[in-house]
Image (cartoon, rainbow, N blue to C red; front, side, top):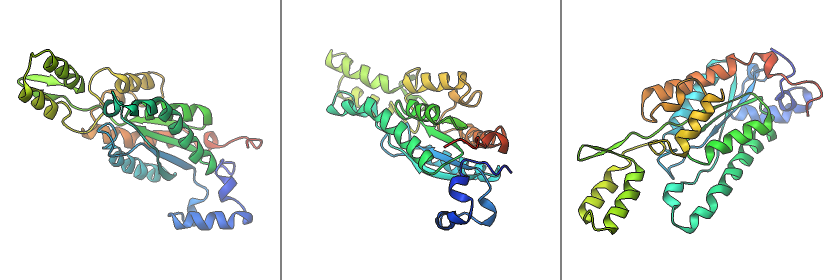
Length: 255
């Protein structure tokens, strides 16, 4: 194992005894201080269906990072939902939240001298926010998309959140009644995952995969399917295995 991991700033030498003491409190043992420390940036929250399943994915990734010989450091970041804040003053916070997310990931990884990062996001702003942070830090990184929502069903038709927006217009035009509007509302978003369709989240997940920042075929998986959790675990393994200790290492002059 290379002695030149970036994390050696906080784990190496007699002067870092207090640093190691604190790391022991979060699960480090004697043999762990020479392993790469990998940040696990989780966008989990119950604010929006886009992110509600991410904690499960983060825990799968955490176990896989340990299995691969790294020490995961799990931390959270915020999200807001455009779909929920749409048409309210809350939308003024939407674009700003992207910068807050990028700053929070960069802050955690750089303040703790982490050697790499695996970021998991599933909504419009924590996805580009995570990518901005990865680009700024220039450390090994992989993005994991939380996955798309499955379609709702009503009267033999697939529904998405757009169906609910359209239903409001139909109701306003007198084309559907109160009951049908309610039934569409009840069925449009049946569970966890980002808005179904080639809207912002699914478009960005496809772009990230094409850029090589996510594993092949991972951009089209549904949040609730087992393959999404399996792909998350594989992403963690690939991050560590594709970056040998020599690749995790930084030049002596690196700050």
